[in-house]
Length: 184
Image 1: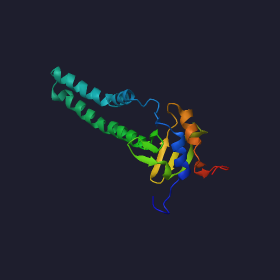
Image 2 (image 1 turned 180 degrees about the horizontal axis):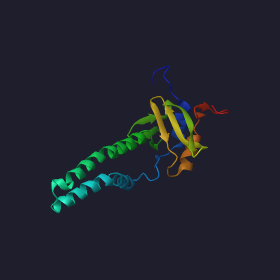
Image 3 (image 1 turned 180 degrees about the vertical axis):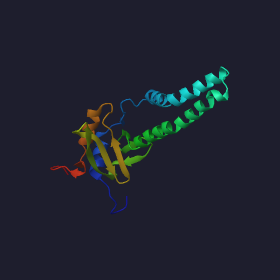
Image 4 (image 1 turned 30 degrees about the vertical axis):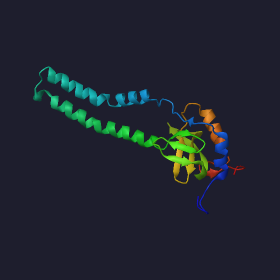
């Protein structure tokens, strides 16, 4: 560590004392089988077009019967389905995968050390449906580090334990970017 470089010693010391082992941050419905099912469901419509085209070819349909159109539309539908799958992976890239005594591991293997933690932000979600506005307070936690941020999503296994662990850290806490009164 260079002199003058940012280092949050209280949080780093606290983590070494209070986090034993690895604390997994596992999203609900985020298992491998769940992801395979979601992707199979997502790509089932283009697959149905291809399957129907193959069945028609096997039954001896001619080109004028629309077999080519089935393959074309099946291929065309692969693009939005693929875009949705890539977008889902892009959104999950900022999620935390685990917490340990050294820092946080992101879902794509990025590593954020506790000594570089600036603050924890409790984010509120605003929903507007049918002319009615609603706020969901403490929807997710954002851990802001020197090299980026990591999100702890709301729908995780053992949410209360993970939330309590993060809230007990000796670090600045913010609510929607505004520093919380009485806590430094």
